[in-house]
Image (cartoon, rainbow, N blue to C red):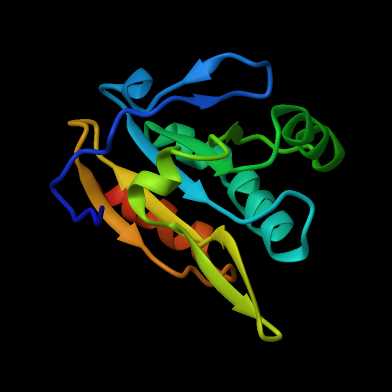
Length: 157
């Protein structure tokens, strides 16, 4: 499935670090940033999460909720949050058949001639109307959180 601005996300449940289900529809009426990343506690993913956390208060002031998503376990997410003092919520995507699978961002990757399944770093900004406002594919971490904040702040301004 390939999504485009103006469309709605499939309402597939994720799992919060406390084990509770969380769905995109839980944020109805609010702007929502879903940032999909490969793995907790790796250099790029740690930087991305810390960058979003640094700007969390500004996202909140713009009426925007942050939700970072990977396939790491809820327990690993909680350790990651605690270790780095992260302010943005994290959620676990299902091992198979999850939201990232439905969106086509859990995909085959290749490194050093070895193929494996992995998360394509992607960010989706959803407007308060529940429709996708913007999608960033194959995200480069440096400056990304600030760019997303600018887009979220400008949305419905």
